[in-house]
Length: 33
Image 1 (tube, rainbow, N blue to C red):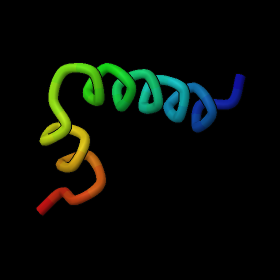
Image 2 (spheres, rainbow, N blue to C red):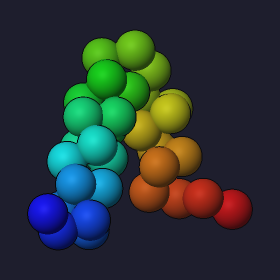
Image 3 (spheres, one colour):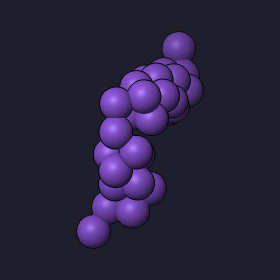
Image 4 (cartoon, helix red, strand yellow):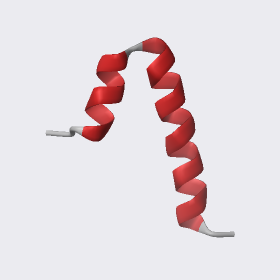
């Protein structure tokens, strides 16, 4: 099983969840600083 592919799937799900709950969280995902 491709570990990176698994991570991408988990990340995609996390982004979808964040998009529903709070767009600020989604912003943080792509702008960590």
